[in-house]
Image (cartoon, rainbow, N blue to C red):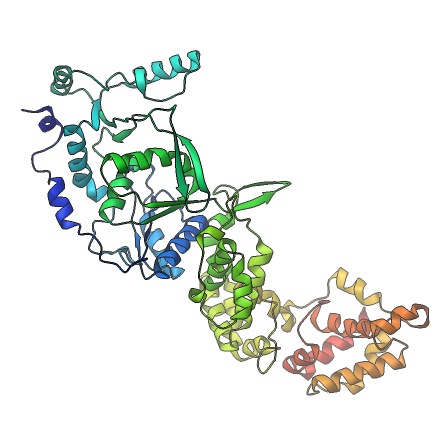
Length: 547
């Protein structure tokens, strides 16, 4: 009996049988096959959505294929429910795989299984062939032996790793291998590298260009003692069988690239094109760092739903991070689908995109501004059902009033208001319309009192007030008050001779804005007064005599 029969069961399929099942893809010239291959080890990082979006766009804009593979061979780190979260997160952001898993976690596609833990026999069939052809060998090194090697390398100043003279079991005699197997000694399978660290290889990366690397000489583990493969080996077999043409992944794998390419070539496989993208970063003081799962709530993709960003806003923001040209394209194509934008890999930032809430909020405001009142109401209501009981109660009890509030500077407006970046902002934009939640802060009162003759201005306006005034009629009354109480008609006139005036007309408007809304900035005040109604507005104006 060959020692291979002691390692692998006779029921393993042959490599030839496997390759007969996994037919080569029949694609148009230039079509790209990409994949996203996350590990189910926790929450879905926004960087995972970023990478998945890039992979999806590269594939679909070339009429290619984008698939989802779950790399779950690290069983110790697997988190229950993480696979389902990956699938639902991709679906939520309209990143739809052509193969792999749908939103519910149902597997589909001709290259199944797409979960690595279910592909154990496939990997073992290839490892068996590698053992037969001398590309791999069993290694019986104990943790103590490996620690001794590490210590000796450290003392001697040698590079760490299992290679060269440190690879004790690389050329272990067959009879001793058989003895170890017969005695039940634990083992792993290692790749038998033919590389030399002193040789240099030049590798072309899709983003970083030509990079010089030392050739790989490490005999890395390709099958663990539990019979499952390591990532290094499994992704080579999977990307070969599944016809991946472009591997787009995080640049934490860049240092492993010489090993991966070496393994593809050793197996006689065509090497896919690799592109390594830098992680999304943020400013921390004066330095940049990666978005952290531990420290940054925005690292978790669920954060964006929890505060109410429209998912399209998040996607468009990520496209903006990927290609800065997206912003100009969007201005030129305000009504086009973001999927019409052609993403270019070579225009990604090699050093990493910088996360910016200001930019995200601006993009989101633009998207919400394009929505109708009914769309904003429905989207906000749906969000509030899971995230904001107070807002939900207000909307349930006052649906028509809330719709009227949301319609201000929206229905019939040439340029819709852009003060809502996320659905959680809506509460702050409507509560001042309700008397139970309205009061003037000390800062607001201070701002009010900074305007000379503020009470006289208000008392003079009250008899003139008409909640049905048009914007022009209302502003004419503001101008009349400005003339009456010696305020300049505009800022230019006031700056030309400040000592001659009590201020300019903006100060007059500010008095009424503060009294009616409690804010120094708000949507159009004439529309606010119309929506609030006569009694509520007059009650707030009359309160000036008690301040």
